Amino acid sequence: MANRPLSYCEKHRRAFIDDLSRLVAIPSVSFPGFPAEPVERSAKAVAELLKRRGLEHVEILRIPGAHPYVYADWLRAPGKPTVLLYAHHDVQPAGRAEKWKTPPFQATAKGGRLFGRGAADDKAGVVVHTSAVAAWLGTEGKLPLNVKVIIEGEEEIGSVHLETFLAKYARRLSADVIVLTDTSNFDVGVPSITTALRGLISMDVEVRTADHPLHSGMWGGPLADPALALARMLASLVDARGRVAVPGAYKDVRPLSALERRSLRSLRYSEKDFRRQAQVLPGVELLGGSAGPLEKMWRLPSVSVNAIQVSSRKDCANIINESAWAHVGMRLVPDMDPQASARALMAHLRRNAPWGAKVAFSNVHASPAWITDPEGPAFAAAQRAMTAGFGREAVFIGSGGSIPFVGPFAKVLGGAPALLIGVEDPFTNPHSENESLHLADFHKSVRSAVLLYEELGRLPPLKRRR
View 1 (cartoon, rainbow, N blue to C red):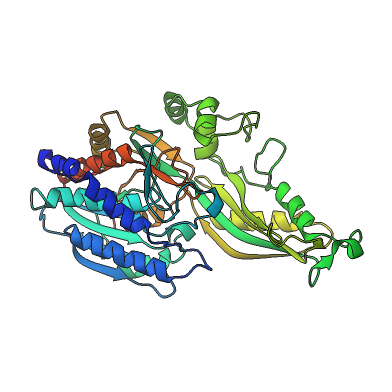
View 2 (tube, rainbow, N blue to C red):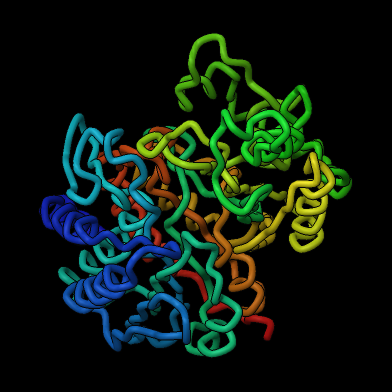
């Protein structure tokens, strides 16, 4: 029974938060243009934590050109199933420093939440794993199943070296079940198992009309402004209702089944709930047509402009710039082909470039959507564990986000069930300023992980298809 490990969790709450705070202090931004050294330092800190919490064979795994992965295991439970625990230690850029209410790379407890970049996404996921392992090893001296751990270093940039990584290390990571702690709960205090993720296309688009910036008074009028050209191109990506206007964007969208529609209705989620969680300003319309907000977020494509740059507020001058740049993202749903969708998106932008403006694309990445059927003993075990850990019935949900690791890895492992359990919530602000972790839910997530190991340990090892 897990009574002693659960008591350990209660006694070591402060130590678990200290583990997380040390990781948050490392600015492990994996994006191009940021220094690689903090990501390397983060990997070493994760390796030290895994070792200190009792895991064995800790090793930093490397792929040429990639940020480091960290591996560890504990394989001393013969006859028991093997679980692969996944999280990532890289983070998004901090964003606008002036918008943060606390230092972004200093974990700060405030109002029942822990603020800091990576406090939730996904360094909390790392610490959920290490804390649950510590609770078992610190009381029982063993785990109720075999454990392998992989902590990725470039999830936030689309796991761009995943194919190479799997080709080299898939056999070492062979497991019966995958558990990923990188998703969100449906609401604060509502334990959730994610069974669908949207895919993602991301790209940089640059528009040029001149060789260098020019005086806007001397040359304005005849000269095409690349910022206006880019604005027209970006505005063409959606129609008046906010639906994706890229030709063919909806042709492969899988209609919801009657069962799926009933499942969405059972969650009782309204536009009012969406406005509350997203903190939409009063009077601002919700877009995307007549579908409900959950269907729009989980099962329909969407497009967003993540960044635009022409000059800057600080260096603004009375000029027409020579170029304008944007980073564009498009979320995909099951059955949408990522490569075909990326080509369609680029073709649409080129087609809508006015005035002969020159268009160039770079840093194009595409990953597919993922969906699974939450049937079988592993999902039932997860639901029992999370219900007990949170003291409230766990629900199955979708997610509008993307984790490129999930689909390819589950496939390489012969269709091993992937259990996506989250430490985030709708108020976490992942990728935005003031990212935070709900502390009570974090501790409930650790308790759930302790119970999940016990539940999965009672299952027979699965016969995997290779």
